[in-house]
Image 1 (cartoon, rainbow, N blue to C red):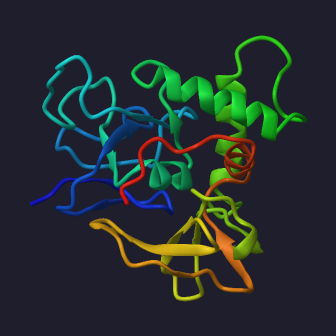
Image 2: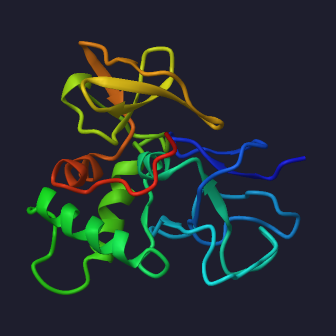
Amino acid sequence: MPLQNRVDPFGRILATAARGTLTGNRGIIHNESRQIVRSHATKAWITCLLDWKGARRAVMTGRKWTELFFLDEATALAAGHRPCGYCRRADYERFVDAWSRGNPELAPSTGRRAPVIDAVLHEERRNEQGRKHTYPALAAELPVGTMYADDSGQRWLAIEKSLARPWSFEGYGPPAARPLDRVAVLTPRSTVRAIAAGYTLSRVDL
């Protein structure tokens, strides 16, 4: 039986046999029975490489972090995660630079920027009821790499030429035209601004 450790674009942690291309964590959020007992334990929600210097570990057995898995980086960013500054250093630096350009009123001029980004993302991930925070925007205006949901709850990834592809844990479906009206954007607003400012997703499972 699969463990509850796969993350969808809403940020929910679910059980599925589908595999991912990235891992990551939100701190220690599992118990001794390898069950998820909380949504997060830190504001730093990160995504990491599956393979790092040949390291191997039994999933959800240690007490250092809870291994979560994502279809790809678009999914991770939509859920409110960012690149890890250790195993994905180059991606992390590109993200921080683009995030600072896209959010100049929020980015500090000096000092460590990761804690500021994490604090902003923490506020953007959830609404006052503790549910996924979304906001309306015209689908045609979303930058490539942004994820949104339609009225039925189907999740979509914005791709080039005003097209989008439907998301599932197993991968993406055939492209379709983005709707002309407003949709519920899943990717946090500051991350969308980072994408618009030049951050290109390095791992998208298309």
